[in-house]
Structure formats: structure tokens, C-alpha cells
Image 1 (cartoon, rainbow, N blue to C red):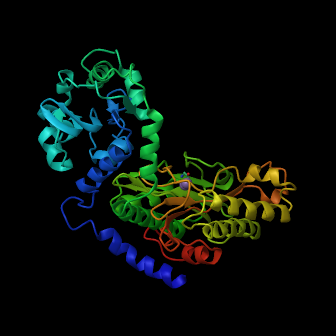
Image 2: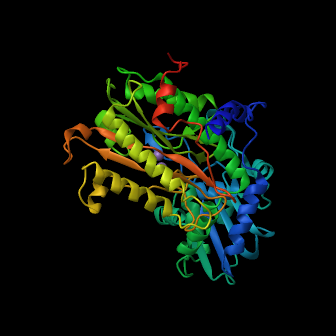
Image 3: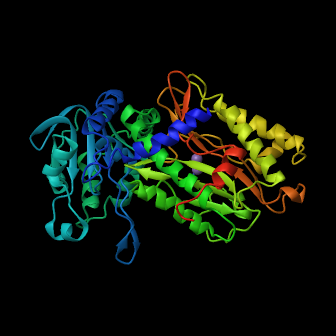
Length: 464
Ligand code: GLY
Ligand code: MN
Ligand code: MN
């Protein structure tokens, strides 16, 4: 096991440099991947149906500053396109729109040189055809004039996100492209008269996204490796009198240094009592000698997120009580790992972890009944991982499923137990891939045991 970890640690730099030999990254999902996903969706669609997918809107942050654009993940999964104001239609049977016959049609925003000078290139019809290798691409203004023969279409399927866009923008009028498209979708496609099968299409796409293709696994391996580097650097650099936001800065520096575009979710770096706040994001506290630091942080790369948590002693050495709770969580995680195998129900890892934590807390006298365990371990152990940090997970584990295993124990001050346990919050979270023969822990390159963590804390950080 140790040997395996060492090998992984040696491989990380190679893994991370793989995409850096060209002027821009060249390891994006391929057009063939997206085409394959569209074909898989169409294959599962009911007869005589059409599915609609809107791109994410641009969201305003304040005044004239927008949030950094983040594409709708279903739209990205099916196209690879990262531009707003776009609409994808997939028909079960071929139809003719604007003199083109086919099953896939993409409406995109037009080129706009004046805007492009400020915010960068818009692909436009030719660029999208070239980049996404989709044949029937039009600018979205054409959608106004498109006649779509809906006489043979029985159901219009919109994901919940697309439905929201339609509700929000329908009838708004104006020149806003989304309003126009929503208007046309709703009237020309007689959305209100056709049964809308949102649940059907949502389930189809969730089912597909739950089992990762080899190209997705390759990206997930990279993003997890970047995240592991962040955690390991924080282990080396953390010391008393550093702030939580400085730990965050080190973590996110390592992500960016390796090419990550975003964090997968807001970084959680809680020390002391903040270790007991599950999604603590403000990261403002000064860390003290004797505290634990719980870091739940991960990078995002080419749309895919990792999700890794490590809990470490700020001064480099666990106190006796911290060690007891830490090792109980570790034991729970190890027993959950044993359930990570193809064919098992996806809640088996949680059942195993919950059993271990319940028994352990009873033995320590922290709880007296099984029901009380939810006071200290209030969340599930696993969720799928992929384009979303909380991605779909298949009901039964199968090769290609990627998910987290993340048991935790949180004992905030004031808890009904001996005060010596207060302020101890521990979560250990790893990213697991189910394989044909068992599982692979993608985040195994970051130490998990007390001895390994204390050893890494003694290593020199690039920030010390
Ligand atoms: N980082 C959020 C979670 O662990 O689910
Ligand atoms: Mn998680
Ligand atoms: Mn997490």
C-alpha cells in the first residue's frame, strides 16, 4: 500500500505536466466524446420526442460586473461549448429545420467583433462547427424564423434547468436572445400542448452522467491529483498563528499552479470550532496551537471537480482526544472502502461507515443510543463526482462510477458529552473509482493515517 502511494506521488508531476506542452491546453473532452453522449441520449429517448437543453445564462454579480461564466453541465456534457445564449435540440427522429435535415440542431450566439475586443472570442456558427463538430448550427436569431414541424412530435422534454429558463423568459419580449428563444420554443413547439417529460430526460441524462467514460476518468484523475497536491502542501505549511485564509491561499495556489481553472466549490478551511461547521466557507479565523484544521477543498479542471477532505493538527501533532476521534473516522472510512465494489448498492459504503461510527461513539460514552449518532455524523458518506461536485451516482455501483467516501464526526462546543471532545471535527474524504476488479482511490496520494499526516507535517513546504 505504502509502495503504491509512493509510486502515485512520483507520478503526480508527470500527470500534471502532460497537458503543458502546447500553447493552450489540448486535453479537453473530444468532439467525438460529446457526439457519443448525444447519441446515447437520443438512443434512450422515447419515440417521437424532442429534448431541449439551454446553455447557462450570464449572471450579474454587481453593477456592470458579471460572475465568471459557468456553463450548464448538461449542455457542456452534450456539446463541449462554453458560451451562453445557446440552445441544443435533439430529436428522436430526423426533422428538417432551416433546410437542414437531421436529429441535432444547435442555435448559438453570433460573432460580435466589438464585444469580442472586450471579452474574447465568440465562436459563431463556423467556429462552433469546427470546434464542436456539430453539423446543423445556426445563430439564435434564425430561431425566430425557423419552422419546426411538430406534428409528429408527441413529447417535448426539457431538463429542470431548461424549464426554469422557459418559465423565466417566456413572454418577456424584448431583444434578449433567451427571451426570444423561450418565446419561440414555447409557441412554435407548442410546449404547453405537448406532454412535457422533464423527469424522463432528467433521468436519462443523470443515468448517463453517473457512469464515467474513459475520457472523463482521465480528466478526473488529473483534477484529483491537483487537489491532492494542494492538501499535501497545506499539511506541510500549516502552523499555529496562520489564518484559515492563508491555508486556503496555499491550497488554491497549488490548484492554479497546475492548470485548474476554478475551485470545484468554495474552499472549506475550518479550524477549532469551525471544524464542526460542515460547509464553513468564510475562512477568517486565526489558527491556534492545539487546533485541528479541516480542509475540504478541491480543484475543477475542464469542467470536472474533485472533492477531497483532510483533517490535520495545526501544530503537526494530534492530541490524544483528536487522535481517538480521527482514528474512529479513519476506521469508518476503511470499512466503507470494503463496500466499494461493483454490484453493491451505492449506499453500502454509508451503511458500513455509520455502523462503525455508531459503535465507536457508544464505546467512548459520547452517545448512549444509536439514534444519537446523527447529532455527530449528520450527513451521508457518498455522492457521485464528476461535472458537478455532487454528481449523479448509479443506484448500484458499476465500473466507471466515481464517488466520494467521506465519513465524519463533529463535536461542537456545548455538545452533551465530556468537554474534552469539544471542538473536534474530523472528516476524511477520498474520491473512488469503481473498476472491474474492485476500486481505485484516486486521492490516495494524500496521507490519511495519523502517522503519515504527522510525518508529512514535518516536511518542508515551498511556502516556509
Ligand atoms: N465538498 C462538499 C462535499 O463534500 O460534499
Ligand atoms: Mn463530498
Ligand atoms: Mn467535500
